[in-house]
Image (cartoon, rainbow, N blue to C red; front, side, top):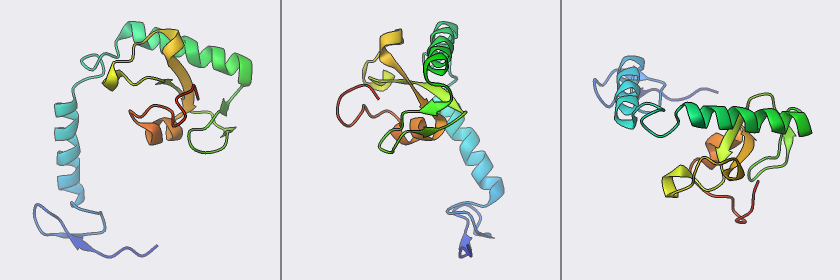
Length: 121
């Protein structure tokens, strides 16, 4: 794909990136990460990691490397992650009943939105 070159929003250097040259994009991402806080600061500490790891292991035991999909059909996937059914951002907890397993792509697509139909994925 031949993308048009655009000026960096910071320095004006032409780039194929959507908004910033590589140097300024890296600085912008670092700033976003700093504002966001660490995983522990956001509530994803050791207890959550243990619960999430157990949820993914149980899913693999029952279904293998299979993602149930989120707004797309179920599919094979090896990069399975734990996902909050009721997002932490809207008050969901870390208990096993509030965790489902999705592949990294589906989890990223879902972000902090609950399932479309209100049921577990």
